[in-house]
Length: 596
Image 1 (cartoon, rainbow, N blue to C red):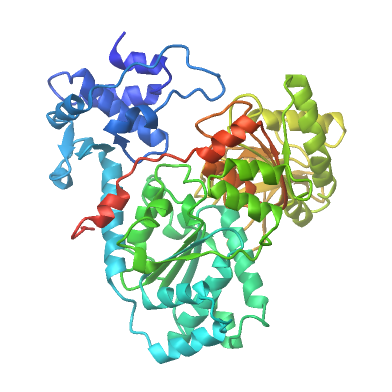
Image 2 (spheres, rainbow, N blue to C red; image 1 turned 180 degrees about the vertical axis):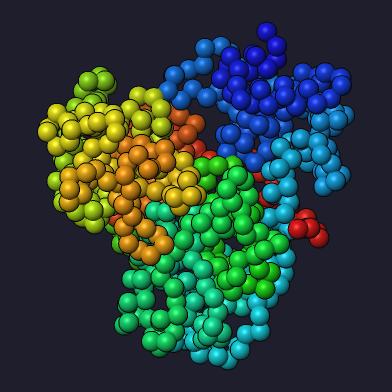
């Protein structure tokens, strides 16, 4: 058995990573050493696991056995190479370029210190760091300071001696070409940015503004939040002219950058043909991976303002990177960054807000105390039954009444889509016992048994759906949700929110890109969404996937009530475990003279 085969057998390396390593090995005359082959495969596997690179010293913790859905690995994990010897073997290989010469090299890997990258991801990181560093050093176009002060006083009236972080965030967003506004749910990020736009329009009445979000659902939520903030005339003291110029419709980032048929990793807009907007606002920035963030930032004109909104404590993006988290650690970007602390959504002593704070603080004892407090009915911990049949019955009692109510509320497309926002089942895993895939099947069976739906492979009335693959021709993207209903003639149609105009799109089920049923979804997929009530189903044993960030993200999807199904051991493990993403973005930002 080769070194690569041993790591595959231990479920550390996936077959695709091994195929990549062997394909790259055929590019050179001399067969690479095992250590170089392992580096090639590890760099590829790391990206598949969400890392930007493989930190050689931490390879064992970055790439643990992938046992989701299978319990335990069948063989003992093999040892990784000794660090110094591994690094030296990689540095000597023609398949690896050192960072000092990588810009002009075509080698498939880049070794930057002890971080090993696929060349493309090293380039994304380098160019993003350079673009952000340039923005952090520069000021926005000329600002009338006196006019800005008056606008901020009007938009953010003084409220005693307490520092107004929203006002400070707005000031930085107007005065700089880069602003990063972070904060938890309900801290006023969207209402702040509406006031930011009003202040910018007060300075430049004809400024072109573009609102962006990483997914269709996040774009819909951003549009709704901006529209609601604009309509609050009591709190938003602006003229009707300025109010009319603040856009309400948000677009997905992919749609704004422009899909090019035949080149799915490239966009129409980029550094050579940037977006026309003078102000670009990106919501849910924590969901944006390194590749997409690099392409977006490079597509924003250097003289335009870029405002990133997000919750740094949420889960990292599904794809490679932990971009917002790293931006919030960078000293270089500190002058551009403001964290909003006060939540207006969750009462200071309310269950969901208190629970989120306890989880974020890493306080497992306090987390469990809140969950078990009968005086906090909006947060509930349900200890899962030991027997599989009993656990299914337990979940059915928690979930089925909500799903039946959702189906019965689906009398029209608008009502059905609104009902999707009232309740959701969230899981840590996609595969395995009571992962999202299995729970979708189980929920469908429950509803069929109760007579609420008649499942069919081609779609059925009342079926909630989620798109799983981007289709830029149809302008549908991974994470877009909808519902299948009969039209006036009884023919099944799929209805989805249209982020282009705030309306509803109608397609035949056959027109849809790859999609799946959406009674349950992973916490990752639920990021960027909000529901009145959620049930979070955790695995019965601790898992590397179940981290503090995952639990915090799951809890804060709920507006009114969250029920967690999990053992005390899993809860303690989650609160005590942080997400681990290997990256060099913070280092790259700190380098003197970062180049774009």
